[in-house]
Image (cartoon, rainbow over all chains, first blue to last red; front, side, top):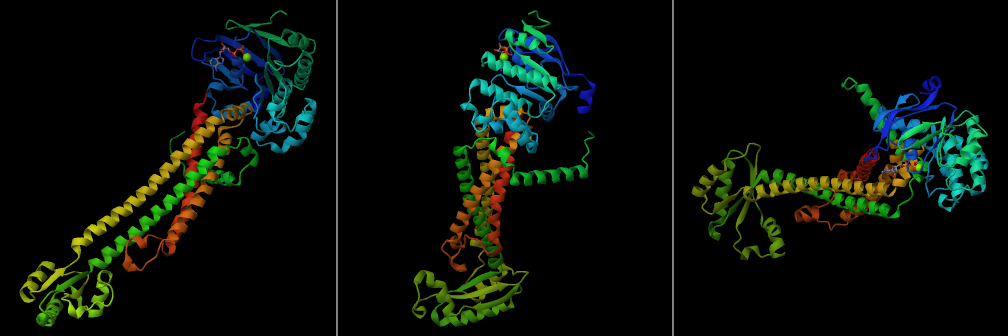
Length: 233
Length: 314
Ligand SMILES: Nc1ncnc2c1ncn2[C@@H]1O[C@H](COP(=O)(O)OP(=O)(O)O)[C@@H](O)[C@H]1O
Ligand SMILES: [Mg+2]
């Protein structure tokens, strides 16, 4: 799979994809291609289906029609284990962070390494990463004891600890102030410079503007079930 | 996929299963911690497994004891019969002598022996107490008959006795032996059925407990999935926990059950069924199978519940 991913520059591809949660289709005929090393924003009004689209991209949902390719493999044909393996190459910052509330922050951040059987790599990585997101002092705290911004930084740290090929972040600056959102953006830009593919869902136009000043980011806009490229700012 | 089963493939899979079971026991303490401790279901599982193991020990004891009883009754009683002679005191000795002569001449009878007064007294002791004045009572004289392997013709013998020894009554025990042996066999079958039901009930209760633990930990499962955990990894934390709890509970229950059986009031063979309800010799090894079996039941029940839940949850 590694080999194929290197040959294929498109790490995640959606072709003519439709999705419905059981009722009417949220979107249909949607096509999206995530090129390796690209930096993309997904924007659109609340309820447009951004989160749903991201979940299709990391195999959490299966398209009701169309084709989804993850690292060159047909997502519809993947077993549950295959999806889990693909998930290890995609760092996800979930909209509501999603931690194990009974475990200290450090263990939560190291969780992706642990489930991949790579716990050995954790310690060195973890200390660097905690310092990088400014959470060294909070390492032993439980997630519910943290502020919204701290949780989002922790979620980002967890998403990147395995050094995944792709980082998908859903409203990563949703409940942080401007200064903190700039710090998170800087982290994501830094990761993109290291070669990671980045996809961020946000409705924060200021964030997009700030990003465009640092990297060549493209913007996709999801509205009324359609995806428009190159939304004007 | 050819649909054919390759024995090598089977062997590899069996080896894999053994390895997984070993890994389960050794455990990954990190993986365990991903599921928060649940005191209530934990205690319920331990208690259930303990209570079931306690019952299982008694079911095993019952099955083994009734098995022994059935074997003994059918083996011992099948080869013996009793001849009872009730005759006026002055004719008694003569009738016993002619009865013995008839019996000696009957093909299929290995031996026949008149019980002494002392033996008769011992037989009657449970009813009349010791020091029974036999002379003062008109107690029938008993003759113990032992058949040989081929057996004798009871109808022919009765006809001959009726003619030659008027006071003789032949009791070949079939009248009460057959229903007793049948009852003992039925009791043994019931014991094994009870064991199966105990196993099934344990599996059902552990499945329910595991299911409730899985439901309570839906958020944990979501997070584990998000970070790329495979179903088997997520299931392992639950499976290990329930297997160890069930094993520990069953160990305690088995110990208590064995102790209770060991403390049953003893008796000699003659006192019969109730005091016989226990383990003898190597029979004590049987209940030791209960804890590992409980652990296996818990392992299978939790694993299938976990994998099923994980699969159906989209
Ligand atoms: N699990 C779900 N079941 C049913 N409907 C859902 C579910 N998740 C989201 N939706 C609906 O799908 C639509 C799009 O939701 P979402 O993808 O979260 O949009 P966005 O992230 O753009 O705000 C919304 O109308 C929402 O109510
Ligand atoms: Mg959303």
